[in-house]
Amino acid sequence: MHKIEKLHRELLEKLNETNRALDRIASLLVSTQLLQECVSPEGEARSAEDCAEIVVESFNAGMCLQEQMVGAQKDFKYQVDEFYISETEDDDDEEESDGPPPNIALRF
Image 1 (cartoon, rainbow, N blue to C red):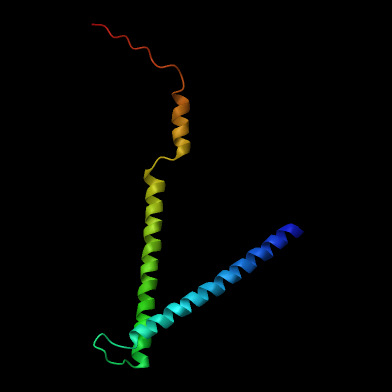
Image 2: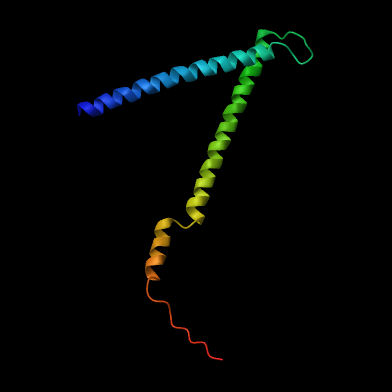
């Protein structure tokens, strides 16, 4: 039990470390986007509210895309599971045909 607890703690430490790194990456991405959006394409300065609105819309669009991707993955998995023959069914077919080949007499 002690070894499992030690592995569990190590896993949690790694997950926390990964989460801290992901938080840093996310904050850098948002900071970069804010810097890019603080000036309009026409070269005019935008207000903080406008920049925040753009970032929120961008985040929401990203969440929608992520949900669409998850849905597409579920659909694909369903189609693969439903329409493709699994390896276990192939193995069963092979076992049935393991006997000698049929005798075919060809006469001309």
